Image (cartoon, rainbow over all chains, first blue to last red; front, side):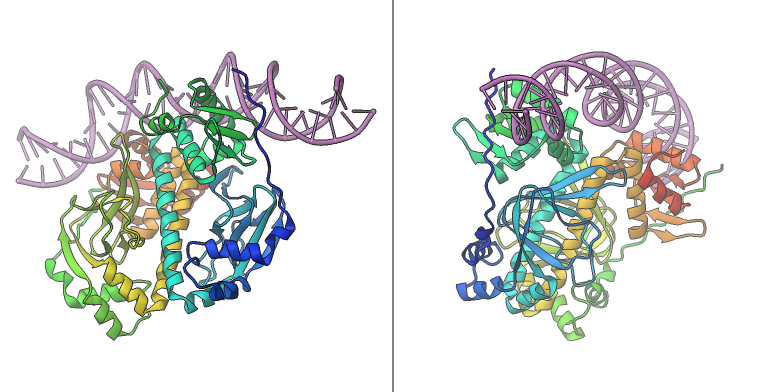
Length: 251
Length: 251
DNA sequence: CGACTTTTTGAGTCTAGTCAAAACATGTGG
DNA sequence: CCACATGTTTTGACTAGACTCAAAAAGTCG
């Protein structure tokens, strides 16, 4: 089977894209702000500051004081935790419109993860104090933020379950599906997951190694479930992949 | 080394203990209510209803509609997720004063875990609607709840990291430490963890099996780190256990 | 004292990790 | 446009940690 040339097309991050217009749009789309009137959003917008970061750059480190809440305006950001032995565990990948950074900043907390730009990105940030003021002004916003965080907690617990009880192959299948629904783009033959997204990253997401991920992906490809190359994956048969994630073993 | 007879003494759950006085005390101690004046707490208390459950009874199931927020008044409750293959993953163990159940109830959500009484327990519950009303009345409470949930998210992510990168032995050591700091009681020779708490449970916490847990615990016992028996564990040397959890391998 | 449950131990097997090397892509500069 | 340098992915052989199955030992309770 001839392997297609890389379908990856990287988005440019034009600094000008962090323009006021664009910022308003991103901020106004956030689940916890989107119900607010334009006036309020404009006011909130003025409290955010933007930061351009290039691929690979760290936005903050695990252990740093958590002084800001961040928002991905453009680009992709990954959240990782490093183990004592230097191994990297990938907790989440965020795209435009996602927020990150701790909310529990009141009590002098520190970040529990490291945030790294996966692509050149434009990040918005707001100080904990300003964010608190927003929460105080808009009680309904706090409620929405609470829901968003609860949602993340549920997702994290789902991952705990998977790591506890599933085989590597099942975990990889699940990870691919999560990524597809979150970051995938429909293509003629399937759903393309394109980030600069390596086997390395998949390994860090599934608590595994590049070699094992590679082997599993080869098996998936043989079965016609996916097609993959350097830093991209296309999912051809989502249903069978889902089946596999639940029941295990390609057979 | 002679093994001590079981030091486990189970607490009685007297139904009368869910008296108004006791309820006020428990509710008033919750991190997100404790700053409120007695009057407000009394009012909140009137919105809670109590339920007595006996050991092993399920309080709700994964997939059930999330209509209530729960509060452990007395006893121990465990949160588990079941996999397709019937395996049980233990997510958390809760004691008196801990809350559980989903906060994201507005959008018609369902519970993502199953809650099981570990001992005979007295549980308080409040409907999602009533809880929302409290949040609306006390904006500062929402903020505290948000912090509490964020904290749990961080804990869950820590567990993801451990499952991803550590050996079973390290995970068991970590689990014991978590349990000790949360549920342990100081004893002459160390910290006693006493719940009806089996190897089975530890296996479900660490994504492992009873046999493997047993072997690891035997090794720990040989090294003088712990002493254990049927449904209880005493930690003798917390520092070395911590060391082990970080660096790995008893040696 | 039994009947029952939980824990421990043992032997065999398999999944996934490690180490090492080859194959492949991608971008660069001649 | 090609050849090379670099980083990524794949493949192979070997190993080890942890699971499974089976059975014995130790606690617990009526």
